[in-house]
Amino acid sequence: MTGVLGFIVFNMELKEPMLPLLTGLFGAASLFFSIKQKTRIGKQRVIEKKIKVSIKKERGVLLSSAIFSPLTLFLPALSSGQIAIIGNQFAKSDRKQFLFMLGIITMLTMCLSFLGLFLISKTRTGSAAAIKSLIGILDWRIFVLIVFVILISGVASFFIVNFLSKKFLIVLEKIDYSKISVITIIVIAIVTFLVSGFLGLIVLMVSTLTGIYCISSGVKRTNMIGCLILPTIILYLF
Image (cartoon, rainbow, N blue to C red; front, side):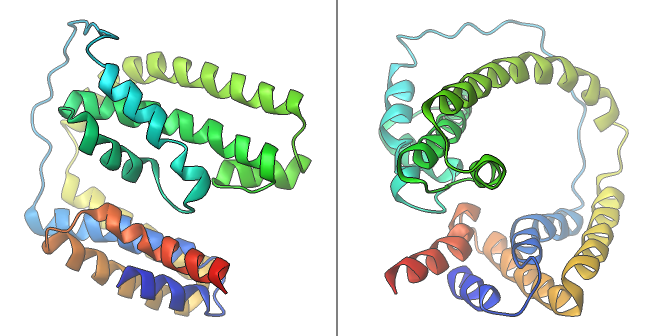
């Protein structure tokens, strides 16, 4: 369904079609579902205990991440989350290990997207496309610099998020999640109208309803990335 929806939307005369399409499928749909369920954020507890990571214990996670991350070079629109799900079929990881694997895959995917730009002049992520539009095709020195920056920023973000998350936990307890969700939906609708016009609002409504149907049916939301995969396959097929 999302593949057909994506194909139709991308063939419409619509400015910034991905804004209403992806925002409706993955954003507004989840917000509406949260409002219906009257989601509340419970009491948060800051855990000061340090968690030790054993390389030997996480060997399967590391191996799966290294094996399946290169799929992003060959399968367009495949996200880090989907690759993590594929890798988890072999690693059989628990929740913490899955998050660990997702973090590794996300960083490797970013590096590989620039490798694809460097080797075959093809972009697989928005970041790579932005760099290509700014400086064109990469030489090996720029490529090494970009990978170095990715690795450094990945390590730095771990410590920054670890610090900031504890501060935000105090704020989260005081937030009325339903009201924030309503305000966010209104902002999404206004931004969509300003960027994509009235037709964009229609696409937003249809994609939101599709997303709600996916969530209520118990289907994994990663399948909705078909809105990008199917149009991409058809584009390269013909």
